[in-house]
Length: 387
Image (cartoon, rainbow, N blue to C red):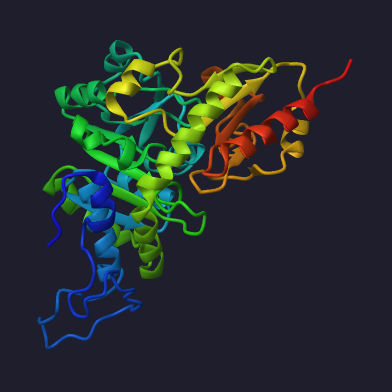
């Protein structure tokens, strides 16, 4: 068995490593729906692939180890993962959510779980005193993102976990933007961590997946039951791809974040840019908190251009950076949150929390930073409104 102390090694050797039968260094793809049993009540530990699959189990063990949790669960998408977690609650329960979260999280709460009388309220989770005052008997969980999508708002994860524990409710963190390489919420006291594995963990824009890690055996049993009962599991081939992606997470994120820091500094000093949202900048909201709980500012940046620039022209003028949904792949992507990732959130709420029509979100890839900055520069120049 491999021994290691650091996450860079755990990314490669963690969880269930290799194949004992053949000595293969990669876990095989067990592309099967069912397993032959020796007799009634006798099996090898595997019965049916919705309930369990060796390739998926290797991925689940890996993400549990990386997040310092008790158990991991792999789902067919990030939204399937969030849906499974929200299925822990029952009619009459309420969940407090961050004032800017992924639009799909808002949508599933507002359009699906509301039908089952599970309610939510949107709160400024950076204001801990105000947040705690909103906890009533109906509130059973606080669900946050930090940094949040798309304004990169930083919430004190440990403080939220402490508040949740004090009131006997669950703390849930969507750690998609940071991954366990940059931030480990369970080590800060959080109960449940969610990932869209589609993003940085997969890292190559070729697999859709979701992951959940829990911090105790009781939650693990409950979530395992939900996963098996509802069936939104990740297939063996996609599990294999995600394991493969995770092996290079460290080296990729080192380049992603190095590029992002330079891009954020470039944008913050640009005359055409009105505001930059990036937790790695010293003047950013939550900079000191993020420094305390994360390795660095991550690789997501949001910004707004001055009124003298046409954002539609800006998007059209980009040549290297692709206009597309999603994030976290090796290629740089740009999107317009108000009409793309957060369109499910009503206009009034978007305006209230700061997701304006002029907001631009960048997922910085691992290309040459010189080429990325040159693309941003020419697109900004092209978008200037001439008088």
